[in-house]
Image 1 (tube, rainbow, N blue to C red):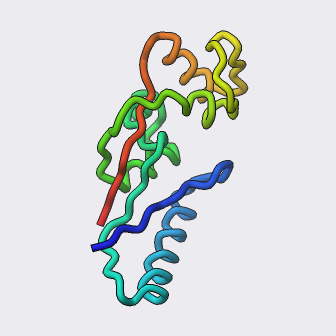
Image 2: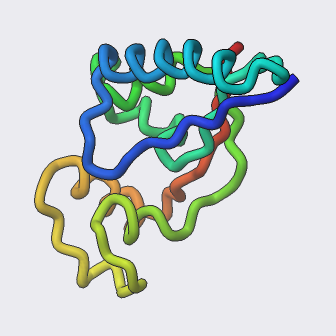
Image 3: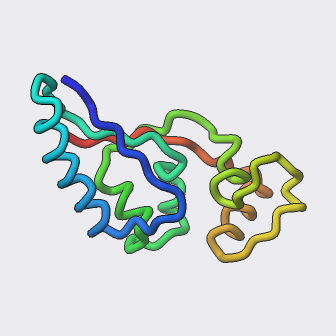
Length: 126
């Protein structure tokens, strides 16, 4: 069996409707264009699969709703997403130099300063 990897584009809102629409499109596209493949599973590997976010994000958040579609396995400590994905800084800098613009960034920064690591995760569903 083959898998379909899900990519999360930067800057878009991951509403449940948008996610469901993308998955529905993939379910139509791949069998049509790759009829010799038998796709069985959707995969997503991302910092957005860090299940630690369930401790501070509401159950209704788009990130948590996205995670809940999957079975998630944490794959390791993620040492770059705080800078790269959350703050949009491509070069590492001391935590004290990061300036949060919203409560999401502030929460991750507070966690990092408290020594709570971020993780990457691999999510899958059939």
